[in-house]
Image (cartoon, rainbow, N blue to C red; front, side):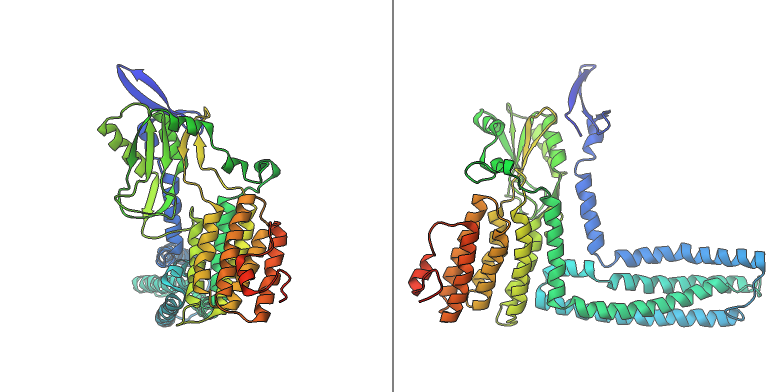
Length: 507
């Protein structure tokens, strides 16, 4: 949508807007599209992660496939007069179809049992939050859909044979029965694949790799552009982040009236349609500043946005605008990674924290999580972060989103792992190695400083566990590599001095 214009017709103001083709569209029609794209993507993610969508689709598909195969049999029988090349008569056909249908129904019970046991194990060991990705990656829904579709297909063919048996006893749908047998053997083959895939999916490295792949996809989708020399100012900070926007400063300095927009329901923000918010603000000459971003939890007392407008607006206008802005927000019961990169980070962190708990005590899984987080944040360290400022076609500031900060993502990734793993020497050393990976892609001073703050905190946690001398030397060698990569001033943190070791790793 472009900038909206106004026309006075018969003494009444009619609001119009320009669509992507440059055609004028009435505002009422345009407002129905508010948040549509964001909501459709959210619904698509819900279908992809659900267990019922594919089985339902396969059952629906069974009807046209069965009727189509019967039609093929009738056409071939009329044209070529093919004989009983697969089964002899209707009785043998009914027994064959009943056997295939009974077999796949039995397999359905086996698949359900394996799936429920696997879900129980995964949720208890890795957390229920991981079930979203586990169900999306599992082939259980595909296999269950194939079994249900095959059973329904056999039932339809059986009914057609029974109905036509009195009409034409010679007609036996040979190709339809052969297809049912093929589907039965295909179901058995897919069951073998399902068992193999399930045995791999409950392993920590596979599950962590799947979540990390989703995190990398979110990095490429939300932060596609690399930082260039033009994006960094003389002080080593991102120019777009370091310099305030004069138009936003002017809007704040003016005597503008403001009012807050509150959410229609409690929950997590799953998505925000910023393009439509910009269009809404341009239509009424407003500036909308978002107070939340995807992934944040909101309730009735948490403002979603603050609206800056010239002059006092009526209560009716505020209520109408609130309803329009609500349409641009998708609020649900959980975080999803469509617009929230922190969702995948938190999922990996949860695996690591559970692995470090006394009940599980699996530091190798925790170190695997640290490696994956380090690799993903290394990709992110060289990317340009959006400023969150959105303008209309006349270059007027209309919407200010809450930007994502690199330091905040670094906190989400490593703070809890450091806190729960402070007593593990191996975990602390692996955290420093992850920071080394990230530092190799770091190009700005503020991100370098964020890495140093975490390195200092990891150092304090490491020496707080009274490590052996050989462990201190190993830790110090990695610290020196990190310091050389980012060219930090000074030699070492205070924790090194208190431990009695110098920067070379010798006493």
